[in-house]
Length: 192
Image (cartoon, rainbow, N blue to C red; front, side, top):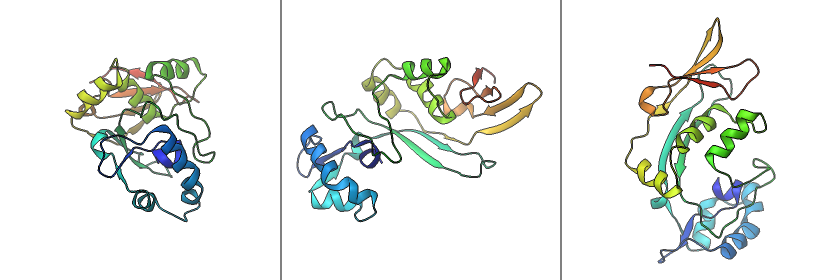
């Protein structure tokens, strides 16, 4: 999805150690993304045709979120960390991804709190966790040594409103988040 939706190619030419450069990545997007989106080719086909190897060794498991059972449309999503190639700017696909920007976790959280950016719960919590780190390199290094705990939020209705609970072992610093009526952001409630 990083290539399909964001236009970043996290791969190397077979036999090299360097991630493809910006010009090569742009050329691959121009050549293949439309046919990939139409289902006429696969990402594996692109890698084979272009003699590329996915840079999976640089991708670090960060989080695993599963939509609560009470939600009709469910997702089972693994989040990975990788330092984006410096020269690759990326480009949204105009379908699943209609806007792209480079920002920091703290900035995105600040905008969400101010009401100028919408964040779904899993994204918000992942940004909260990422905001602990000063650099991408630090986040990748520390995350590499930590286990990933699957998170299936539990929704609770209380007299005060709706709360979402997550396991303490997932290391988000909170176990319960209050969600105001009509809000997608929520306020952290430090419990247990």
